[in-house]
Image (cartoon, rainbow, N blue to C red; front, side, top):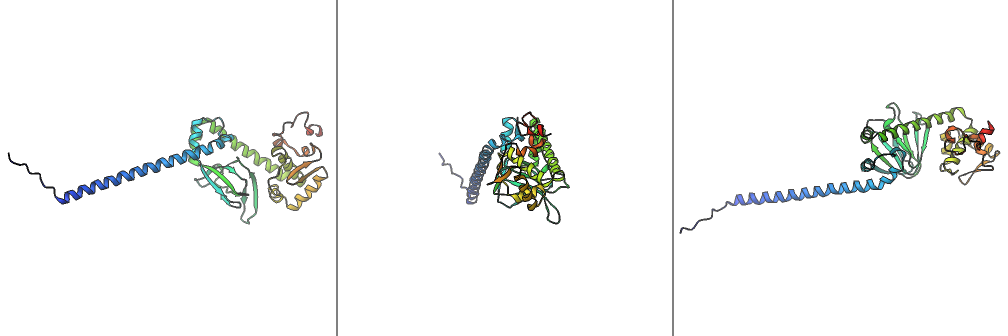
Length: 285
């Protein structure tokens, strides 16, 4: 029986085959690495989302939202740390974001061409600033008064959940309404109150909302109230004659009702006695 000859494979074919196998192996390795990178990114997003989820649940902006929606939003959060004195521009440019102060405090300010500053509001932990809802004619900045961290969501993510979640849409409307009310209250204080009334009003709001603990310097408070530090000191001297003073950054009263005379509806909304028969204003008026 004749012996069958095995055809000889050209060396060039062998080399080509080896090259193909080598490239295939490299492609598989690259693909595996890409899969691992994606899985790592997803794991980090999930970890970051879980880390911020409890904080988001504490904010009125996200109340009554479904758990699955909150989980999804949490993975879209961008977290960034800032140093004291840093300034974050908040101009409306189509890439604006919704910011949530996670740690620290700061102030929302408006500067004119002379460098003069108007403090629109002081911002503390859990406060929300939505620059995406500012007018395109209005530029403002956020200055950090201490080392802080800020969480934010892109405009596209916010708009997506406004259309998908009626609860979130309602919460956004409530937030914007509260911001308008705050600006109206501040405008009334700036234009219609005397220096003494401004300082008394501010100390009363701190007494009700922050247990009388001052977290800002006297110069910062003066700037917010639109008065000079000298006027602030004179107002404090007059208030001290009424039994109201500041000691170790704590508001003190000789009588529990001393500051009540500087109360109004905006501040009184957080006082359990405002408008009741136990409210000193009822008897004063």
